[in-house]
Length: 130
Image (tube, rainbow, N blue to C red; front, side, top):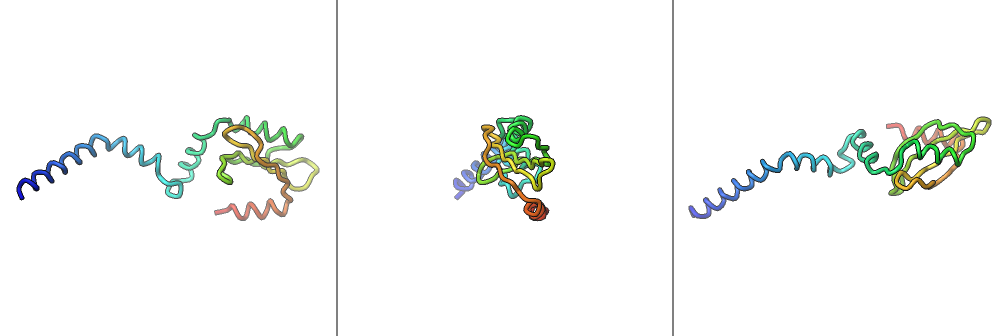
């Protein structure tokens, strides 16, 4: 019985020592692997930015090349259908609605270009509010 107690005490001491030595690393690792639904918006944004290969400026130039004469109204980095994309809402003077251009944030290709009517754009903005 005493032998079992000594073994248990030795295991507990070894575990405590290992935890003390790796505590700082484990805290950093824990932050890195925290599930997205437990992260703050800033942490999620930072994690997404770290995965991009092209800059927002490069993506904006690509998007604007698809909508000549357009002015970027809004832009956002988001994950859509499993892809990390920059999404740009581009307004063309004299035309109704906006052009939404999605640019892959990893390889810079245009993923999608879609015209949204003013009504559809308003509906989308209401849906996105928290």
